[in-house]
Each structure stands twice: as structure tokens, then as C-alpha cells.
Image (cartoon, rainbow over the protein chains, first blue to last red):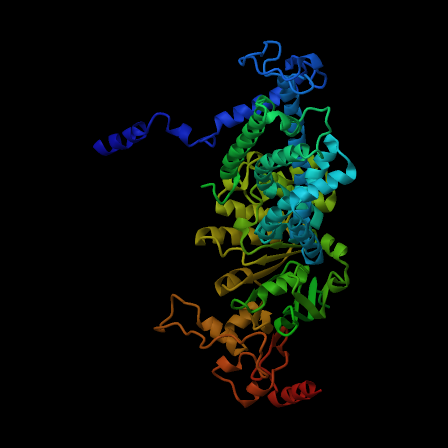
Length: 299
Length: 340
């Protein structure tokens, strides 16, 4: 029979690797992920990778340019700063600061914001009013000014920066998550849980939370970029990570006086690091958003 | 001496109040009903007649705008309206369970079937994970899910509609409730699955001695499933009694009209009779009988005064001036009552 033969040949007409395109990893941002992974590895193995102590320099070797410029030596591959500290080592240890600060601050903001968002959306009533008006007020404060204000109160240290960034940015989570919860709580499975006698807390933890985790993750990856920038800005302004520690924003700040006399490596190099990390985080976040957002994902 | 009813509703009223308090919608108005253990009570009525609100009232899971304004709900000798929220939480799912209007959407897409069937058992009986899961497997078997061993580990999207429906049924009976409320559980199913599901509900009911409240607008299902029937119109029970007797001789013109609007194979009539007009706005109820504007047999009194609930014969009630056996006497008594 000719018809059955036709039917049988149909599958083989498809391109051989068609199934790969259908995978969830299509369009996966390989380079940004590699960059982020690289930065993470550098942060973890900073002790092994850094050729010099990042906090101690020799004044005899101040302002050495990178090795390819005249006057540069192979001893200091990317030159030295005004105290004779190795720029490469400081960049490597700076990666650690940026990684730790961005991840913990995003987690902190995420936990606080998601919790309050779920409570606000699910419990409703005056609780919702209180939390949401608090969020409104919070958002009316300029984030950076608020962060500087907080930093001035608690004093500079890396963990204080994490807390400051957390309490500056939790509001973004709270808003988004609350919106999702409002629609989730009208879903039938939540109603079934209610008539099955589950308490409010059981429903929030077992039925609502797992359904908003996706959004929280997407928001988190997009927030990483914002948090890194803010951390760098705070360090640049002198209210971030305290000076002996190497942070990229701090390095920018230290290098700015000598930029005019041509010592570009002190500002351009940490600037590039910040840009690369933020760009990578944003691209990865965008991809995740498309993959995890039910409205954009085509089921 | 008849047994005490399992659930007895007395003059129950639930109103929705607008935010400003200016509009009051009498969604459930002065409803009295009773159901005995092992019985099936069908509640029929058109959309917006208060059937679902009544179900939510019994479980006390009403939306914030709704208030239970009066009445009593005696369940196994306890007034559910006097219970605290925590006590009600223990009643829901354990002693009174409910199957929702859209069982297809009632399962959480993120959890396995076993997890969801086991949830009420763990919540109410504090059972360990393994016991609850074993029970879940047995429950799936009892609702005729093939190979429950593998199904417990699967997710809702891996099931067909009929299967998901039966799983929701299994969740309903998981803690062996005394009363199961099924709110239009078959509307989203096709006819063959519907018939299977109804049979399953009947079997479960007989196996566990459940009382079943079956909310529907399908009188055909009522005829097959129910022992008792309550017809709701505009928030009130206009007629109640045993199904067969109501079907044979409806006492209220609305019930009669409903029965006349069912298509029948043996029918020699050319057209189905529709009920003219619309149900009244529940926030602007007419002073008289709520059905009077659409009633073909309404007379002056109907437009002026709402008829009281009268016992027409043993076990039957109706809210109609025509149904009162001694119209004059009852009407006069009713008049006096309304006047006070």
C-alpha cells in the first residue's frame, strides 16, 4: 500500500537534530555563563591564583604599568596601584567580594521580599495594606541615597553591605510575588486545599511558595546586576567595602585621581570586570526569564 | 422514631455586603434543609440561585464580603456557626469534605498525585509520610485508578481528565468524612466519563455510608443520583422533598417549569418550554414571591407578600401560596407572621 509507506517515511523527513532545537536549552547564553562561571572559579580559588598579596604592596613598585607598556614588568602583569599593590591580585580578590556580596544580598532580599509578598498577597486585608504601603514608601526613597544613609549608620563592612543591599531591594520581590499570589490564590487547587482543611500557613508554604519560586529565581538573576552596580557604587563613594579589602568599586575610586595622568589601568580594568559580570548576569537572567516565565514560555 | 439528621440547616441566611454597606445581596435567604447519614440530597437551581454559596456557607469558607447573618447549622449535634476558625479547620476535609466545581484545575501542578492525596491525611491525622502514602495508594485503588503504584509518583499533567477527577474524589474521601459536598463535579466532563464518575460517587457513598450533597443544574443527574431534592430560586429553597414525589407532582410552579424544560425522548410536544423573564436582582428583591414576575399562575397576593415555607405533605415543603393545603388558614397565618 502506498499510503502506509508514505506514513512510514514521514518521520525520517524531519531534520536529524530537530529534537535538539526543541530542548529547553535552546538559545542558552553560553558565553555569559562561561564568564560568570569563570569569575566564580576565580573567586573560589583566589588564594591559589593571585600572584601577590592584594592588600600589601611595596612602595618601591608604585604605579607600574601593565607588562606590555614601557616600564611594565612580568612580575606585575597588570601593573600596580598607588601603594604598589598588584592590580591583578586585587582584581582576583575583588571577584570574591563581588560574588559573595551579590549572591548573598540577592538571596537576602529574595527571602525577605518573597516571604512578605506571599503573606501580603495571601492573607490580604490590613496585613496587605500595611506591607504594600511600606513597599510604596520604600520605593519612594531613592535606593542609592537610602543605601548610603544606612551605610553611614551601621558603618562599612562587607556583611553590612549585604544587609544594606538586602533591605534596599526586597521591595521589588514583594511587589512581583504579591501579584502572582493574588492570581494563584484564586486557583482551584488552592480552594481545594482550603476546603480540605489546610491552615493558611500550610497553603502558603506547600501550595503558594513552590508556584512563585520560578518568578523569584528570574527576579534574582536580574537583580544580581543591579546589586553589583550598587555595591561598586557604594564602594566608589567610600561607604562600601572598607579600604584594605579589594573591591572593584573601591579600585575605581582609588584610581580616579591618577586617571588624568594616564594611569588608565587602575580604572579601566576594574571597570571592565564590573561591566562583564553585570552584562553576563543580565543576559543569563533574560534567558531564564523567557524560559521560566509562564507568560513568555510557550507550553 | 426517625434518626436525627446528620446535618440540619435552620433558617440559614448568607448575604454579600458591598464595601460601602449600601448593597446587600441575599445569596442564601432563610434556608432550612436536612440530610441524614447515607442520603443524597440534590440541590438544583439556575446560575446565581445561591447553590454554591450555600455549599461554601456549610464549610464556612466564604469570600470576605459574605456574612452569615442568621440561622443554625447543626452537624452531628454541634452548631457549626458557633465553632471557632481553628475548630472549623478540623471539620473541613475530615468530617465534611468538598469536591469543587472544576476538579480538572483542583490539583496543584507541582506535586505528585500521592503527595496531594496524602496531604489531608497528614494534615488531619498527623500520619507519617509512609502511612499517608500507603493510604493514598489504597485510595487510588478504591477510585479505580489503574496501577496506583506508579500513578502516585506521577504529576497531574500525566493524567487524563477523568482520572484527575477521580483523584479529586479520592482526596475528598481520604479522611473518611461523614458528609461530602459535590459542587457540579461533572460539568467539565464529557458524558461517558460523567456517567462513570457518578457511578463511582454512588459506590463510594454506599461503601462508606457517606451523606452526599450534590449541587447541579442537571435534573437528569438528580433523578439518577439523589434521594432528596431541594430546588433553589433567588437564594431561597422554593421546594424540597423526596425526588420521586417532586418529579411526579411538583408543588411549586418553578419546579414544574424546570421539569418541563427537560427534553424527553418520548415527548410529543414540538418545542421545549422555556421560563420567560430573568431571575430577580438579589439586591432588589420584589416584595412578594421572588418567582411571581415569571410565574404563569401568579395572582395578586403573590406580588404583595412572600409565601412562607409550608409543609405540603409529610417530608415535603414548598414556598408557594398555591401549595398550602388550606390556603386561607396558612395564608392568614403567614400574613400575620409577615405583619409582625
